[in-house]
Length: 457
Image 1: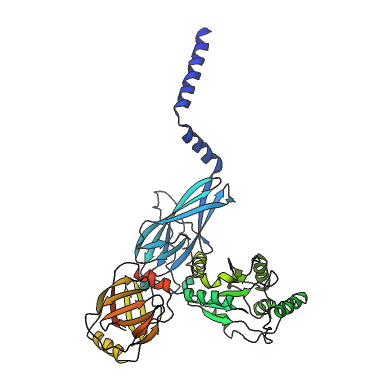
Image 2: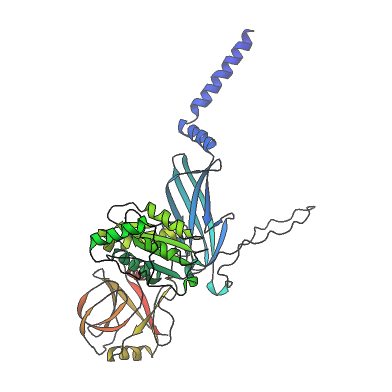
């Protein structure tokens, strides 16, 4: 009897010693992991990423969405980080926008933090050359192949997943209603970022100039649930898959002219993205009104800013559009068209096309390039331009000019300057990259020396 009790005591003491040797933190982590069952789910567009390899073509961008789940229930994500194993092949922004840059494979890792714990997941991306892709935009996802075991009955091969539409080529409309001009400022920034077409919504009867009179009229329209007649109309609305919709907030909601606009067209299958300004009113009620009137549309995350800050919202607007995954122009493709007789500017994988001026300087520059492409080293200067020596003097036609993004300037007769900001001086204009933004130029040329090749298309 005594020996049995002694044996049980020794077994108990041994178990205690083993437990004490286990680090408390690891023990707790194992318990937490077992308890939470936290998993990370990824989605591209409306398609869940169920395979570990996703195929894209060069130049295409995709928005990667992430969800945290615990026992199949969503958990609020406090923070998420994305990382690419090879940024030259596939890069990913802090908002989860994947850019396929060149052929190859890369691994995207996602790490999330929640109040219930942390989790990670990953995705392999295979980038195929654009010229070998199918007309639909991307090579369909291929099923994983598993070797057949001896004696097994052959199973039918699963059908490949459908390819996603190329959202980057979708036509974009930027419709806006404005009185003070604040909504138009935001519309201009969206147009610069996406290359979309601007359209101003105007009523047949103009609103009064006096602010108090405008308030009185707007109040009456709201009480009557009126639909003001519109003076302007989008003739080719069916061409646009994405519609940015801008307006000021009046009495905490959309102006009634916005309802007139939304109820004048069929928005079935389109994306509608509201943007608005106000003094202090919250935008949420107006977003609900847009959803109510844009029947059949998918209404995405809106953008709001105080009217007094509208002129300085470029950075916030750009981040918002990146977060939405709306790419508009594709920086790795031609931004201003590939038209014969234009100047072709190549920096790495990015190509710009510029219209040359009609002067003796541009003519001499063109004659120089007829001898063959010219590659020059260009350097940053004054945080507003890239400058590089042409190695040859050209005739000048100086005049007082205020530059803007995309202006091509001949400096001192022998240097090419590509501006991405404003500067006023006596310059010779050689040409201009139309429709390009400061951000696109900075992305292409970077903030250090870059080799740029100039040629005639």
